[in-house]
Image (cartoon, rainbow, N blue to C red; front, top):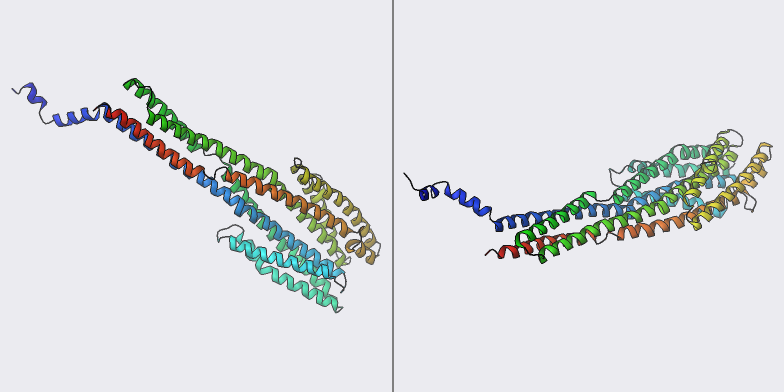
Length: 439
């Protein structure tokens, strides 16, 4: 019969010995340290990834989507103003002034340049690319029709008015619709980038909290098992993890707050001001084209009625712009001035329309496109100038606040990465000190 010692030295003795060695306190400490270090590194990787993605979205807001949205609005304004100015030049009956001609040429050139710029900044999968392509193809055709209309008018050919109305129809019913679609697509992308940039990295925050809890529990267990109050390595790791978590929470919250302000106090009011100016230009075009039509249609006067309500009626763009700029005295003052200019415009429009209805066409034209201070043109120019002033102020507000939001997390990703690596090293160093005491 084999002895007790023989049984212990039998085939199963090796595995039992291994299990006992694995279960020794040093081995358990080393395993726990490895898992803690891995958790710290995982927190660092997740933090760097989530912060980097939000920083990229903030960069897109500042450098890509907001400028593209603003450029899209400028494309619309340039096209609408070109249509208005073309009609003004036509109404000058072969005596188009140099200022009107220069304004029309500048509008066409601006629209062309911005479309080229937008095409260069947009990829094939960009939702606005299809509208950019169409507008690039249609703009030269429109310009050619306008030149034909003016040439015919200078020669006294009646077809000039028909050509201009056809060109304006292409602009109003097709090109401006496409420009509006482009603006809406770029604005939707801006809103999407804002949402991505402002979202808090909850996964990283949650993992950071878990890491801190585990680090504290590990130190309590070390204290109970070794009766040592302080472990410098573990304390260092806890401090690094705490700083990384606080930096993440505070930095991302601050960035989100700045970005929210850049939207509420910059981008959103700017979008409403853009819409107001777009609607004002549509009103102005309808007004001029109604005179070009010489009573052959009531479509333009109906367009004025519709668009003027959208601009200045209850809940219209001017009212919304006034509401969105209520906390900004500079922008608010400019919008109030624009509202006052519209009331003058409305009164002068009614006077010009009354003259046209009574058969005094020359008076109607003079009241509409004249250069005097009491004309429709003067009121419109005043309104447009006020909106431009407010828009420039809101653009400046957006840029300053969005830059602050982007800067709030500029060092967060690399800083968190370094801190979590140091935390992992602190865990390993602290535990190894305790393991060495068993030797």
